[in-house]
Amino acid sequence: MTDLVSSIQLSIEIVKKLRDLNDKLKDADFKMLLADLQGELADAKLEVVALKEKMADLLTKNADLTTKLETRTSEQPEPMEGGYKLGEKGPYCIACFEKEGKKILLPRAQSLHAHFGKYFCPVCKNHS
Image 1 (cartoon, helix red, strand yellow):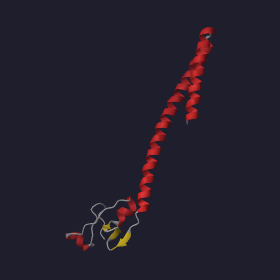
Image 2 (cartoon, helix red, strand yellow):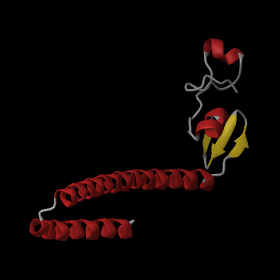
Image 3 (spheres, one colour):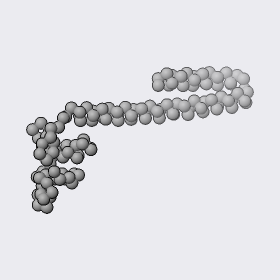
Image 4 (cartoon, helix red, strand yellow):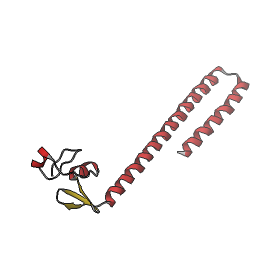
């Protein structure tokens, strides 16, 4: 990427030198070609800036996803009645943990929900 930027910067310097030479030549066709070249170089420089921004965004997203993956793989849940157990805490909702990677502690099911299972997830509404 830096090679591309330095190449563009070198091209801009060459354009400036050609413009100085152009002042001496006073040729209309040469001026037109020089203006076209300068416009193309400006477009290329803008595209490099946009690509740098996109690359920075992708690197940030990659770092976030890597951290999330490392966290998820380092926590190995143990099955228990009604869900998963992580360390001494639990039960956690199996559906939320498997699908979303979320750790939702399950409260005991109350009233109507108690007929469908011992625990009720307030997020995904799963009974276990």
